[in-house]
Image (tube, rainbow, N blue to C red; front, side):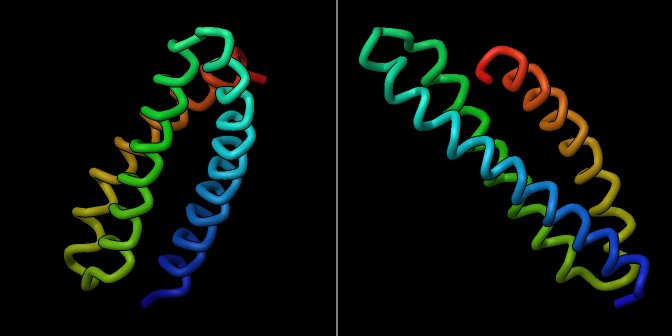
Length: 96
C-alpha cells in the first residue's frame, strides 16, 4: 500500500472517529429529546449513525482493495463522504 494511500486512509479514519464522537454526544441529547417527544431528533441521529457505519464499511473495503480497485472504490467513497459531511454539518448546527 502506498504511503499516500496510507496517509489518506489514516486521515479519513481520524475524521470518522471525530464524527463518531459527535454521534455519541448527540445520542445522549436524543435520549432527552425522546422523553420530550422530539422524534425528529431521534430519527436524524439514527440516520446519521447508519450512514456513518456504511461509510466506515466502505473505507474498510477500499483499504483492503488492490491498487487498481482502490481508485475506483475511492471515487464512490468520496461521493458518500461529501454527502455525509454535509449531513453532519447540518446536524451540528441544529443539534449542538
